[in-house]
Image (cartoon, rainbow, N blue to C red; front, side):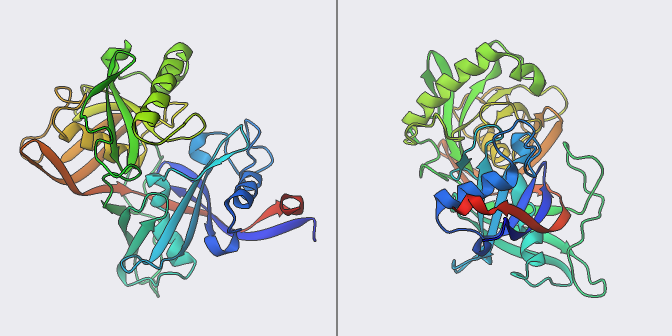
Length: 365
């Protein structure tokens, strides 16, 4: 066997995250072997990921795997992996809505979906959660239809502008647990603190900032420096995982966490999202959908904090450390019961590099 094995990949920014996008069929089927390959690709095990293409942060050690889908509705399957920065381990249980923004362009670039003049709708099934998402990708005819990355769309957390990619999420309620509120309660207590345990796009534990002695408008760095607070929240998260039927989540990244507060900059609610052991520098797409649902559902910890638009209450603007995220929810509340039909998010993506990533042959030995 040669000293290294070459695997084709695209390096892409998806939303406010970044990482390699692979054809799933170019990688090992066995998850244990796959984890070893992804750890080597990213360089997990070093704070700077110096021996791989990771960027030393959770938002830059994410991996996307795309393949043609056997689902009747979907064009492609999206399999996500979160590689730990310092610890050599991989979590295949969550999904990532930011990296999802690059799945449509990647599927077109890999030849799995044929681009149409103008825009191309790519129907995506999330392998991790079963969610169905339609990505609307700009594909002008120049001279043949291809992905357009330049444009005027701006998302907070990414410099400059790019072509818009609209993500329409369907079937995201009960993504991992099968229920909006896995315990049957819109609000309960863990360690004498009110929490909402909710599962929309991603299972989450959501807490009011004021109940933790915070304003909810702290920077991500300020929160990460509060080690006693983050340790307290982690203990609560582990208990939340048990209550939500997720088992021992000590080394798993779900459920995620968020703190919510009243808005301060013209939005509808302020939030700080955790990945879960550090505060996200901006906001995760799946987290944004879950937080928006928490703001709209009656009886949650967000009730009374949110400032909804009376004319368009389904348009939720979430204030996060780097700005704002807009979530467009198609929902209803009937006799106090919240139902989410779909949720839309505007994101952007950019192809950074295409080629082959080199994996040491010893990874297979």
